[in-house]
Image (cartoon, rainbow, N blue to C red):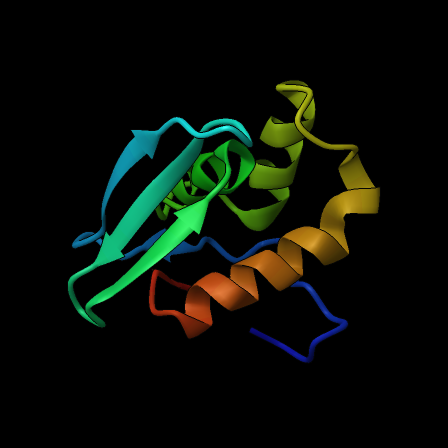
Amino acid sequence: MEKKDELNLGRKPTRNSQLKWRKEESEKGDCFLVFNPETEQLHTLRPLGIKILELCDGNHSIEQIIHQLSIDGLLEGKDAEPEIGNFLNELQKRRMISI
């Protein structure tokens, strides 16, 4: 991605096709265990994180992902851009998506 404070909303992130995940229930609420065979790492994501990961299908731009999450009532439009950008950067660092 670009500099940390710049978010190119037109880019279309693509998730790593090797990822496997399953839903887990816990005292703190539902979460998803995501295994990346490429790195042999296991990650825990909340429902919002897995929804973002699902939308990283190469067909949705970052702007469309933010819009969809807003429609679904999961976040507030433009105010969420930096948070989504940071989250996408983390996913990219962990080789869970490419941007």
